[in-house]
Image 1 (spheres, one colour):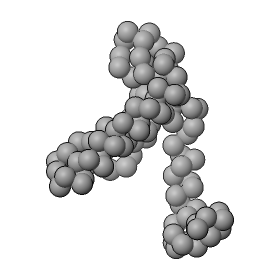
Image 2 (spheres, rainbow, N blue to C red; image 1 turned 120 degrees about the vertical axis):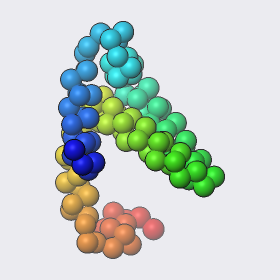
Image 3 (cartoon, one colour; image 1 turned 60 degrees about the vertical axis):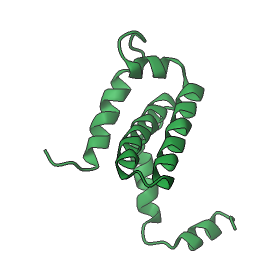
Length: 109
């Protein structure tokens, strides 16, 4: 099987299926049981670790930490009852627009 973005959808299905499962049954179930704040904190930690790997020039670390970051992003999506497809749709909506134009449309500087 070739690696592509559909892996995120498959992983999200697994993560979402763990909601409400026994917290002792998996790391994902344990994290989800802690709620949105804990999931968000973990996502932030993984983001920082990804940044550190990038700044230090650790390409392998960037790959590994990015995988952790995406996993924890999906956990947060599940915890907050947000469908990643909504994020994909927002990205599609923005596709082809200048970042400066997008920020101006939101009133940002």
